[in-house]
Length: 316
View: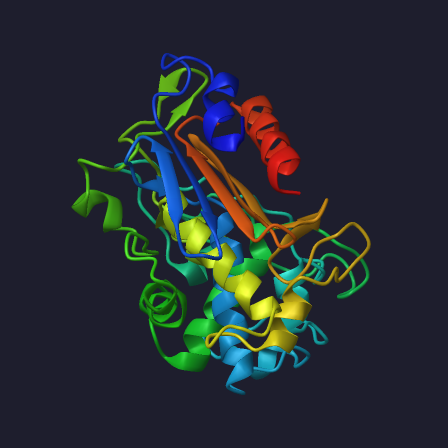
């Protein structure tokens, strides 16, 4: 018995989780899928994917990891100096502690600059430095809101199109997009979120904070990215140099967080939670295996942890 045979035993009945997608893949290229054939928000795994794209810009010398972010920002500036791209990726810039709940159907949606400034209709505080940069780990979507603005400014390209070019298309993530209209174009497959047993109004929230929480994807597509990172770490990827993959998978602070990557127990990847959804995507380099699970229920933390533990036992 392995993960493919046992995962269903850990998932409550369909009255609890009406939509779940599962994928397992290996470096041989085969990807096994189960559950519902749905599109899901990738939640904070969006950060992991955005980090891969950012490192591709570092590889071609468009960005430097240790340069002050204000050298790249033009439409908006982060007050103060000394904050680097590396610190944004690693959540060590000490910025405002924000979790982005998104915007329900019918609500006005702010621009990224309104979010950064904390101006209406933004529903989160303005982004500012609250701790000296580089002093401690503070997980916050604010870091990736700044990163999104930085990448847009540097490349003069809308963020969703930039990530499609840098990551989604070359990795083969054909069913993934940061475009917030994407689920509306695929309403027959877009998973409707649930929280506390109640459906999310309108099905899902819009996430203008795309780098931090705005990707829509499938478990199979997320597995493809994790396996590409495995190849890069082994020096076998045409997309990311081995030295940058190594930095992505190296703890930047005590506690095991790399560059846009959760680390620990012989695995790397990311977990995620948006309004109405939970998910995870991890790879185990020793076995060359990746697993992703996406659920359209927010309050299912115990189920997610049990599935991660099952994958650990099988592939760690």
